[in-house]
Length: 308
Image 1 (spheres, one colour):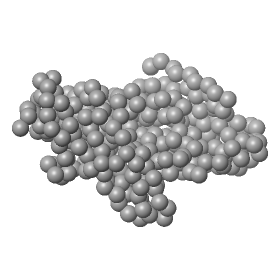
Image 2 (cartoon, rainbow, N blue to C red):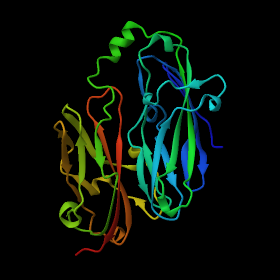
Image 3 (tube, one colour):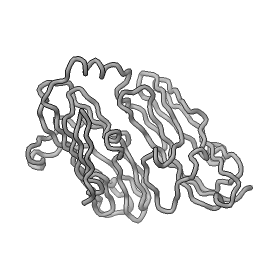
């Protein structure tokens, strides 16, 4: 088992057992997570609490689709002292499907919302994250899977009026209705020494779908490894400067029920250390003005060549 991470604030006490769940061909970064003293009516992003997103890693021999399902466990399979969570919709994922190659990882935020119901005070619940390959994934005869347990404890104290008013000040709590496509981009033969338009050269761009009836405002940027919270991928190294990946807009506004396109540009310096290399860059997308921050990450895998 890995180290136990303990983190406490006025609102919660949380413990994570990292890299504790493994299966044949797939693993998850959390085996069991204890989240204590949550308030009714509150919404919590576990990544913001722990600085650790939920990570799944595929260890098969060929590309596969990996899926994360939020499941209500059978009562006989819950930990002593806990009940099955009343509704799996309490837990939302920013991304629950990934197309992963051998050794590649996918990442998602895990958002917990506790209904504003006084009868929940003092209750303890278990919910499972079931990570598995899709049927036929990676040409496996039998699918592979692992289960991570989230153990939730709700504060026995009712939320005060002041706390409720503070919570309602935010315009948005957590907007998870939009979709970013694709969740990873792979491009090869990218020349160094000039700005490359990926739309023109490779037909690649970022598309953001807003299926809701409200306008969506997003911040989109290329980030360093420390901000992305993404681990390295086999055969690729993080670019020394995230600004080698440029975007057409830093702020993207998406009208209701539409798709917005964000153009991407690569601009590697004309230096020997950037020629014939494999680099990983990360795009971070997050809604503006939310009281509960959520982030989406798009990995960009680049193989460079010499200057044309």
